[in-house]
Length: 415
Ligand SMILES: Cc1cc2nc3c(=O)[nH]c(=O)nc-3n(C[C@H](O)[C@H](O)[C@H](O)COP(=O)(O)OP(=O)(O)OC[C@H]3O[C@@H](n4cnc5c(N)ncnc54)[C@H](O)[C@@H]3O)c2cc1C
Image (cartoon, rainbow, N blue to C red; front, top):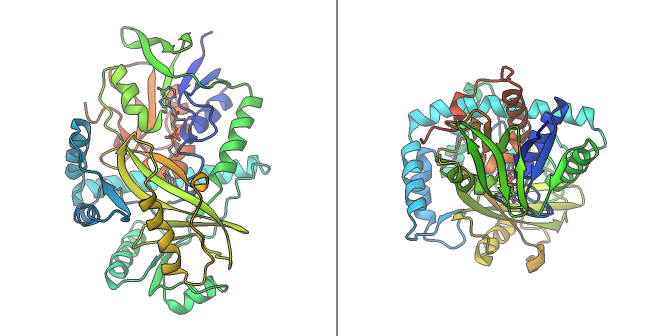
């Protein structure tokens, strides 16, 4: 019997392997790296059913244009002559309309809620996972009147879709952060959100899968495929050919390149972001987004992670310290008493979010193929949505009904 091959060992690949091995499928996971670091290990770890609006939303275009002139801004597209980038931007602009966003909301909401329920189930089944799932919600803190208006409007919209949202004033913030000042006019708290330690989750999942018999072929780059009719027969790697029953493309920001090898279009850009860990002193208690700067604050008791910026970067992985400085400067702008120190080079983590132009992931069968599945393009929600994506892909692999309607995630929507 030939194995099912998963290409890409980020969190989406790992959760896909997790649900496939539960079904008794023989799985081999291939990754070109040693799996010590990818986009799934150092991110902010927020589980966000509240994020029902995709990145491609109407306000983003005017904001994006104004942010493009600042090297420390939260969102940046480096203007350059690049056909792939131009094509991606055009599709992004096309998707950023009220009607497209309205269509996307139920899909994002349903997959987020499914995923959160799967995290709760996962924690119950694996109390030793050390992923530290904290279910205290996510707070969107704002300092300006314009951002307050935006966030409060969004809170009303979220309520309309059945999500809980509490609008908080400065007195509430003092109770939530008793150890230091959070300098904000107010905040919206989404009690249904959560956060976890992505590195701990990743490490646990990988060793659990190894124990369960999933084969890991690391430092093995996929270079091409051998096909017959509408099926892939084998994967060609730098270390040789591997025959397969079915394949799943979970290659993150590089999934577009894998799709190209199979002659279908999967528009994708890497959205580069950074994070760094600090000693949590004085202790910040609440997972928060500093909304004007789009900085994520993820407390883990004695330590805390600050992360942010979205630079549409293709697959360029260089570190731009100015953007890291933008995140760093936000800390004391919102928490004036926090003892922050600028991170050393080796303390700066970077990752490329796999961004589809419409902000919706690609989940399902690849167009024109009977044995190729895709799970990618989760942008800023890959941790949040990985369990549901893995479960849905395992269901499709096993020809079962899917746990939710997935038409909005159609892989071939740009073909
Ligand atoms: C600063 C920052 C903060 C974030 N915060 C959050 C958050 O709070 N909540 C959230 O839900 N998400 C967050 N994200 C997004 C999240 O990290 C990503 O969506 C997620 O990690 C993507 O996972 P993935 O498995 O799709 O891709 P990746 O983790 O990038 O994995 C893809 C893998 O595929 C491999 N690969 C690619 N091509 C090949 C090939 N040809 N051959 C072999 N291997 C290949 C790569 O080596 C890589 O290991 C954040 C991201 C950043 C940068």
